Amino acid sequence: LKLAVLISGGGSNLQALLAAAADPAYPAQIVCVGSDTDAAGIAHAHAAGIPSFIVRPGDFTNREAWGLALAAALREHGIGEDPEEQSLVVSAGLMRILPAEFVRTFTPNLINTHPALLPLFPGAHAVRDALAAGATETGVTVHVIDEGVDTGPVIRQARVRVLPGENEADLHERIKELERPLLVETVREIALGKIQLSQL
Ligand code: GRF
Image 1 (cartoon, helix red, strand yellow):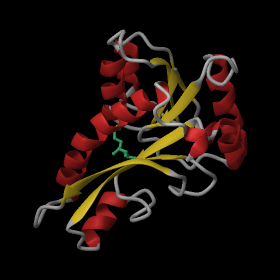
Image 2 (image 1 turned 90 degrees about the vertical axis):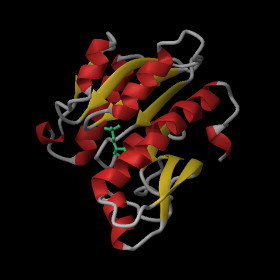
Image 3 (image 1 turned 120 degrees about the vertical axis):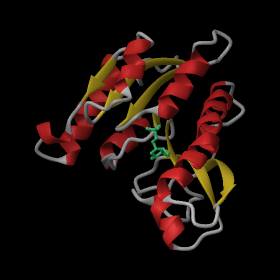
Image 4 (image 1 turned 45 degrees about the vertical axis):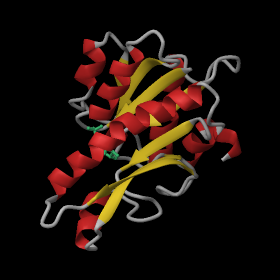
């Protein structure tokens, strides 16, 4: 399974996937890393010798044009090119809404990880929103990206208790402690055919 990982930030989920894929027994290979900005996480791709590319929304007149350029960059790196070889695009902290045409091109081989128990707390501030709502439990969701925002079919979830008085950064880090292995394992199961994305 050929993976492309899309990031916007520090890329600790990318780092976990890189570490897993370094084991030749892991059934997926990361062939490229893409970002919408010069994200710190791109350093992890460089360190692993994985090609990376930046496609900046600001360089395009609208979201659709950005999406087309992002799709082209993925194809240039062999993602979605060969119908014989399954590809998977993993959004791991990409803080952008992907345009409908991009989603239609890649889904269902297009997944996202979100730091809340969807459908609870969708959007860009999930951890903050869970705290503000006084949630005593939250977690992480790996789901197929559809044309909505954080609305695609749920693939896997993991739960974490919210500690009294915990702040956003601490809670988010504890969520990530579950998120990273969940993402690695979910990608493994997709690669092995234990999860059929087209049947969700
Ligand atoms: C992850 O928690 C992801 O769910 C959210 O942004 C965070 C990215 O973290 N969308 P990292 O860049 O992988 O460390």
